[in-house]
Length: 436
Image (cartoon, rainbow, N blue to C red; front, side):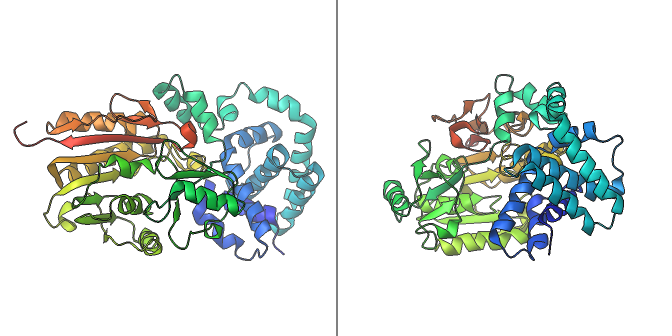
């Protein structure tokens, strides 16, 4: 029988080796038949990723010397044990005993004594260690130091709330398909089904459930009445200023949430094209379109390579949901804090500039381009737009007159947790006619 703590430790070990948590979860848990056991392992893995730097700092106080690289599995197991003791409703004796028992399957006989000693020492020294960690920003905020420094520099009045929000559990948000049912009617439907929820007032269609539930268990999901989508992501389609008979491009379309929202708002478009670079992500777009009984022209291509997918006809609207650091959605994907490196931000910003320059070619004069990221770093947002506008005299900001987010030099920023939303940045540019 698989030890659940060991399963979690092996998953964490893979994440620290550079793999995303979502990619690591399924295979090790395929042999775990009980849904509650799988959910428990999920919670343990997400929790360790969320508080990794804090847990690792605690472990540093408990170990006489650092673990060897070849024993990263034991290191990960120790972190899972500490997380149980610090954050989970697991009795101390059970957390220690079961984590120690997990070492039997590691084929490292020495690990049993080490794990037992470390976890018991934590229980004896908990108050002293916690006091010591107050002076360590990485441990206190559970973020890498470079990340703390960047957020503090970019958001001097909001940096602590951003870091704190990143460590919270995200709300479970839905988008109501108002072509099929009104938001008020769907809220009634949820209440009747025993799922209390509230509207997201900054959106036209957004709802937050009081308690998360599997989407396919919600009323009307299979019929296309709702989609799972964070409130901040729901703002994108509305910013395109859609109207009948326009040609629209969604340039980075996976997983298809913004794409299908565009069609919910305006089904009478002259055409809707969607580009996705990664072949593995196309089935998810197709699945979303099929469930909602919608269609769009899909291209599996690098959006930068305009000659490879564009037919020469200009678009009236372009949505650029640019690849980014995802620093605004850490509460949904806490492994980002382990996987992202400081150097990644500059490389992503360079890619964002190239993407904007390429896609500007396909936009009709007088048309709009909406630029979006789920990042809070100015280097990927305001600085990208500032540089782009300096090098493109035919680009002008179309100010967003909205009641959400924080105003920036260009565009607006929703910081994580604001309006019960993820961290998102939006800006809208108008392409000026020739000669202006």
